[in-house]
Image (cartoon, rainbow, N blue to C red; front, side, top):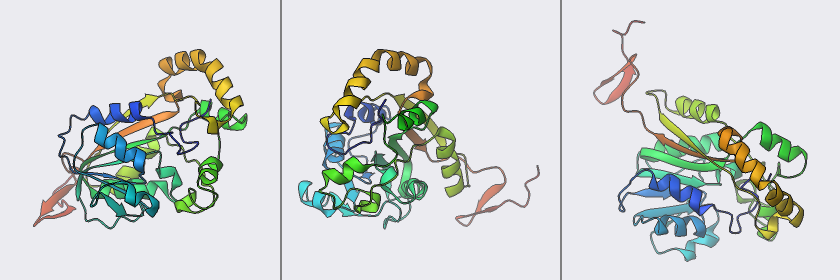
Length: 258
């Protein structure tokens, strides 16, 4: 079993990502930021119907490939935008390229007004077994090789990044820690992606295709063994009961009692 973040060459799972975005029922003019993004992300968002999109990355090679005003040079771990600058913030298969994926997730949450959508690899017993037997990578060598051994790794350097895979609990804890003022509204969706690109290697592709019926059945019953995780997190609708707002500032409520 190989997961979906082996290589950026044609690896964006448009169907899975588009389904997560479409489920939100957002208007076409929703102000949307994509972080760790490239041309595939731009094409996906445009094909999904969004017309007010900014894509960002540390790799300036993508800048000429999108219209003027639609590109921004940004480190996802330290976005230059003000709080709540965008309605929604999107990432697909990019957080694992950050030195601190958790910080990048928090930054996405900070600059969103309504919520975030993150498509990333999921950690599971099955994925750890796949890494152990050589059917999935612990470090993303393929992305660096694809960029001529110059970029494509950790923080867009030539050092292959560790492929960070998430659990649901990690996502919730990260968001709660970043913004402890109210409970984030988080939902998860699951997908299975098997190796299809030549870059994954013939052996992996062949084994993946042979195992597809069994893996599909397994992941249908045990969804959390899937290798794709879609995170949809909305901002809290109300403050925790021990907090209140005074002159626009959130403070501890001295009248609160357990």
